[in-house]
Amino acid sequence: MYEKYGLFIDGSWSGAVGGGAAPVISPVSEKPLGEAPVAAAADTEAAIATAERGLAAWRARTAFERADALHAIADEMIRRKGEAARMISSETGKPIAQAEREWALSCDQFRWYAEEARRVYGRIVESRIPGGRFEVTREPIGVVAAFTAWNFPAALVARKVAPALAAGCSVIVRPSNQTPGTAMVMVDCCRAGALPDGTVNLVVGPTAETYAPIMASPLVRKVSLTGSTRVGQQMIRDAADTMKKVTMELGGNAPLIVYDDADLRTALDVSVPTKFANAGQVCVTADRFFIHESLHDAFVDGFAARAKALKLGDGLDPAAQMGPVINGGRRAELEGVVKDAVKAGARVVAGGGRAAAFNAGFFLEPTVLADVNDDMKVFAEENFGPIAAITRFRDEDEVLARANAGDMGLSAYAFTANPARARRTVAALKAGMVGINSFAMAASEAPFGGTRYSGMGREGGAEGITDYLDTKLAQVVF
Image (cartoon, rainbow, N blue to C red; front, side):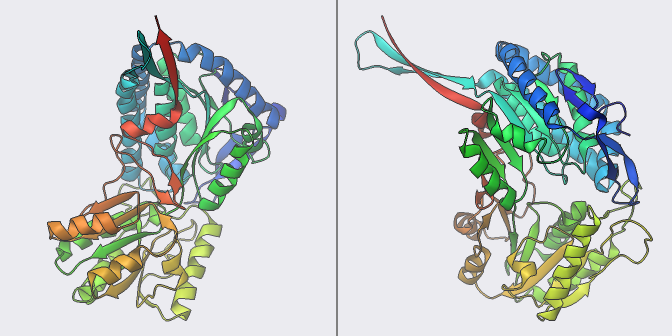
């Protein structure tokens, strides 16, 4: 499955120095999908050196040439959408329809940033010196390292590679060891852009051989991470030694508020498939469900009925609506979260354990817990799985205070029919993104990111390219 790819360094695919390789395990069958190369430190150092050479050639291209290259990459991605979706589904277990949508959103990133490449504007500022002026220009920051997680193995790579290329940067992609093939397909599509050798590179392997050389190198000027808060904190500390710029999209523990005036059916119809998409392994998905006491019982019953009706299965089966979680360790952790909640007084309304119909695969039933309180681990911490924890509330001030409890601030949601209440809620919630009667956050044209322990910087939108640029001021006098 990975034989025709490998590590991508200096414009070509190759094996690792020393021939190291490791199996990539299917979350559906628990068997190897194949073996992917495992980079040695020498491979990563070679990628850094070639990225520095590629940077010199790529940043010399005009904005219009860079835009044409990104459009060519998007064209190739569209041509290979079937191959890519199968790879995404095979590596993550997510349903093929969700994999196809993820690849389409990834294509959008290259389309959007192809046009943003043409709009990296400077400005002229009048000087106090007679005959002078200030010229403000924007320049590529340099070599960029992109570290991505496994849950969206295409979209997370595209969010980093597309703006980096649009800005004129070269990039080293370090995908998750659990989903390297998806990144390999995308990097191979980048060849359609006729980029200078070394502009895009890919290394896969353990921390000591990939992460450590990148973080120690003064040639790498920016790192972008999608991952956990703990890893992000360590990366910020490591980046300080060489003063790298950082962008962090970290964890979340999103609240969902259903007010008493909400359309109950719409809230249920939208929130259930969103919660259990990718088996709940979505950083922006709702984890904490605050339901007004007048709607609480009906919401719990409706949510549980819809959860029980979801069809679990191999993501490559078009009928499957939810696949497995990524690995056995993750499933065991989630089982522990449910057990702890029940021990503390929560009530299992749907699911709660392993899916009995499967002899293999890391399947966990879509789980709904009621009678949850704010101190339970399932509520206080991001569960990152197919677990919906539901509690009730009485008034607006109360629920907003409870929703803002904790350190995370990635996304938050509310359902209401009252525009004034919607505005108050948006203003009050401490999150980088707020959805009112909607969960649609991930779009190439919109800035994506969080506040507080959920990270810094933005990906997507006009804001997404700024972290890949340095601002230069020139005082010109004639």
